[in-house]
Length: 464
Image (cartoon, rainbow, N blue to C red; front, side):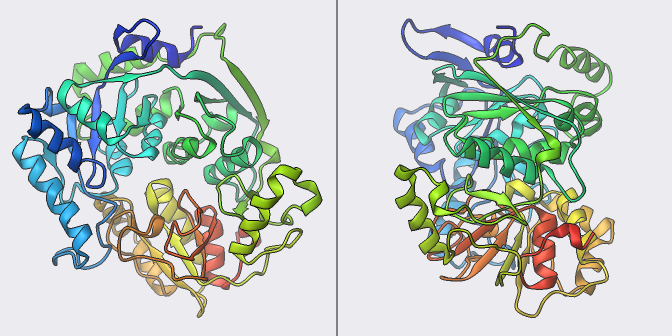
């Protein structure tokens, strides 16, 4: 096989169960407040402690409000989950970055930026978007609560080995086309089940030319194609990003680590279970029109005509159109929107704020738009201020909020009201994902910014 996925997976196999799963060693477990309480209760019931507490990092993100974090959380369910994580971390001696801690943020933003996620690692979290960390050259995937308990107790997990897929994107992405557009494009081609049962390695010149932030966005969305996870082999971009970060190796250990990381690539003769090739020149700024992330199109295209949809898919397509208030064949350019959300573990990094600011600079927020600009961590918030982006955004009529998952999912105060349209840089557009009855259009930070200043769906290339 000789794929990078095989190399990392095989290096972490503890034992093989005949005709059963693999016992896999886990290098890093991330815990957030939503999927961990029952796992900790399980440890208590069995009277055991985490096996390797130094490998485990906890932080709240889903339920945290993005304003007034120095005050008690008003929502009782959110408060109890956030409080429980703090108690559990203290009781079991685990590192915990609570609200208002300068190390806090969305777990999938903080892990890479602190150098906690490193090439060659196996990384898990009770959250499907754990695939984000694959951008570091790691095998990272989401797990269920019972599996969180398994890793807490043994630092191992039982897993069936997925098949391997190579997605190669060659050429150069065009003007105004981002990693988010590439991910939405791939989903529109593969559908939300096209990579089910596979672990995806993203390859090719277009992927290599992505920044670390771009790769994190691309890997984040692997799960939306049905993949178990996705990753990019580490290279000079990875090493430059990691050098000097808090938990990255230092001195001689750094040189030794880089020498090892340079071996982490698929062999020239690597055999994948499935290989796909795409041309970067075919990708345009994208937007979704339906109720799953695979229902996406170029921003200047028309929603597919009904007769172009396979007969068995038409009822689902029609249901999505009814929910979204759209019609088959409709153009979305110029369609009014109500909310714009910049943030989430998909697009809450400094590069995303730079992109957004590049469009709104010298312009004003449209009067009909409510905009939530939410950094993925306190470190990102600090970078925004250090670079003066907060001033650019303020002059255009925008405010930067406090870190958290925010309007990605309706688990905190930032909910899109029923019937309202939101251009969102998050990862899911399911019915009610951003609030009961909310209508989500997934897009890049550039497309979100274009909507924020025009008040309607706008091709960002016209404003660059």
